[in-house]
Length: 146
Length: 147
Image 1: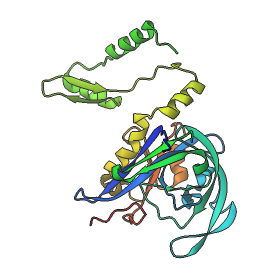
Image 2: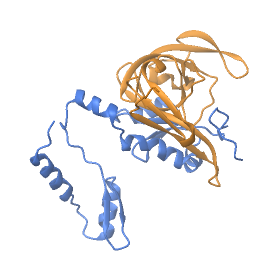
Image 3: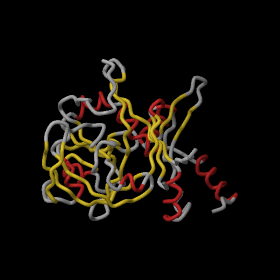
Image 4: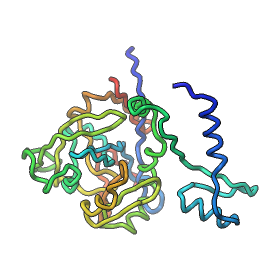
């Protein structure tokens, strides 16, 4: 039996309706985006094992030091029901006490949502961290030393 | 690093020496609110105060990075909690705005992200999000159906 140690816990954040009933729960990771001149701004990102590349809503482009969202490398990607064009950039992210350089897509295909400004995808992230899901307790366990 | 008795003694003195110019309970409570100290009056008439105080030079920046990687920060982690707990009232007040959240409060808001960034230029790691005018549709993988 393999034993794994985790050093961080990400709890699922609840969204409730006006009556206080839970309508959704999301594993949200507060991630620091390091801008081109070193400014650090934190964003809530949804941990999404279904996303291959970390994807941010396109209107966050000023945080990357861009003048418009579509200056990067154009790529086609599939969403639930269609293919759309996204733009690829390399940025520095800090999460769980570790700074990593990884690709991100800026996309117009993500709906603006107050709880998360994008999706934390697998590319690079899964190489740098180890994850364990505990669905019954609505927690995600993470190690920065996989 | 070994914590010395002097360091702990100075820490205790600093906590004991919080003073205000107020001369009444109401004035003291207003002062504590103003400087951002979380406090409440207990049923027995005591004053409970919770606040953060920074002691520079506790460890080196390199050592801090190691500690931070292995020890969660309650102050930082709570911003997400605060957002989700207060989402409804925030949506009512800030619909269509970009907001920056500090320690359990909205420290700035603006209709565009570039405008917001000019307001929070001197804040380290502000928590940024956008409040849409339309109610969000919760259709992601982790959504649970209990309507």
